[in-house]
Image (tube, rainbow, N blue to C red; front, side, top):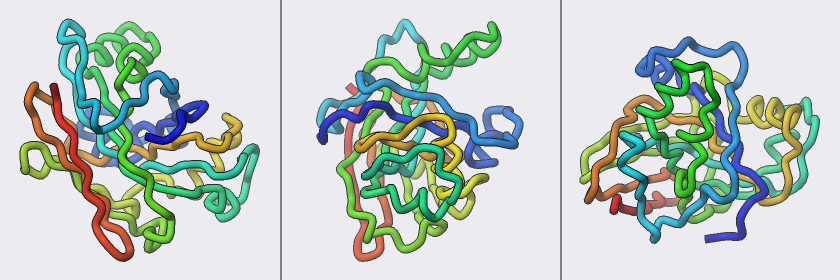
Length: 212
């Protein structure tokens, strides 16, 4: 696993179908939240959480790494030039806890930013990206397809997302952007075998992990 970023910026409700499956309205601007560096684990670590916190859902996401500082950028194309690598990641979510926090009008951090809630695969050179609006990926649990992602279906395209994020958070070299999850999120169970596939320009990149 690479050196830890200063922060992991996540985008919520970025696919309309995912917003719908959770009963959320489609946002009129990107929904942003942050995971701390302490949330990051490697695939080899495997996934675990305190069962007293309730169900943990998988959210597979196309993920970006920042290669140069980015702050207050208004041009989406210039914002894209700050990306130096891509991968897939799992934004793990304690769904029962998140629902309870939402009902109370409280922040999500306990359900989204806990230790081990960010699982990143190996970084891939951006030359493997055919086009930013044509990246596809999928996620399987026990060899059964759970999620299929296509960046052409993002509510806000990646260039727009990066520019918008840079208006709010100064992005430093090594920072991570998780662009949001497609429909199909569901609870994980002990013993589950997980597989993420990023369909690149020259090859497919497949990564595996497991639930303890």
